[in-house]
Amino acid sequence: MDHQAVLAVDIGGTKIAAGLVGPDGVVRGHAETATPATEPLIGEALRTLLTSVTAGVRPSAVGLASAGPLDLRRGTVSPVNIPAWRDFPLVELAAAIVPGVPVTLVGDGIAAAVGEHWLGAGRGSASMLGIVVSTGIGGGLVLNGVPYPGPSGNAGHLGHTVVDPAGPSCTCGAAGCVEAHASGPSMVRWARRHGWTGTDARRLAADAGHGDPIALAAFDQGTQALARGIVAAATLCDLDRVVIGGGVSAAGPLLFTPLRRHVERFSTLGFVRRLTVEPAALGRQSGLLGAARSAMLADPAPGRPITA
Image 1: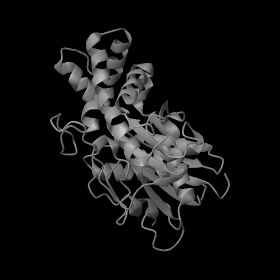
Image 2: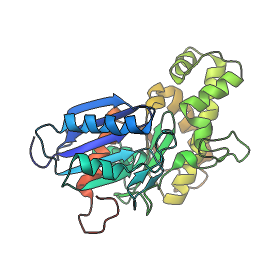
Image 3: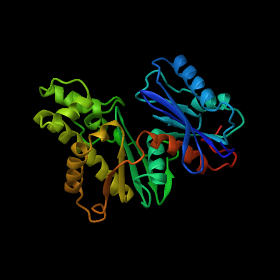
């Protein structure tokens, strides 16, 4: 591994993944661990993981992708789906584990979008929205070919866009968010309220694939909410592509067929109708690659709030 390798880390509610990424986008030394339930254990798990991945290698930089919200100025994260972390000093911890190199922090949604725009289904798009549909719903924007995390690092949070003010409560404290309708657990809860007896999103997709009417209806109502959020974002940001990854996207046509139909139905303006919706191409590595690419693109000027 040459000295240009970036240590990339992708932190989610169920797993923490890390790897060394070269300028060619190849991930080497990939490793991951389950996300522990308590803050001290998460910190120790991260330390053990990064130490093992970087054994004998000094990376040129560290790129961190984490569920948010983030506080870039302080280098802290408070992921909605990781209750054990509130104002957790993630940048400080990474800088202590890998001292002497710049550390770049980005949201997991923007990381996935950057990865797909760099090497995946977003290549060649002018302005795109990357979406991760899983336990939660994350989002990230690439506008005019440039990642746009926003001043606080939280731009693109599509999952917490309200599409139904009278809808179900969301983990963020609002009601009727896209995530409250269209995440895997949210669709499962909707289906169970309507008589379905399964327990998880994988089973829901399997039953929908076999024609179960309640499971199919769960995907339909979930994709309606997701489509409303997508069309609103496309109208606001003049997008030409949406790329969707995450565990729920593995449902394939069960998700994308009704989603594309609803996006077309809700797209009333001509410039929005050019929007295409595509499945992510990089799978579980989109976040790692986006974290690495974000570190590669980071401005090394002093005072940059996303570096340590």
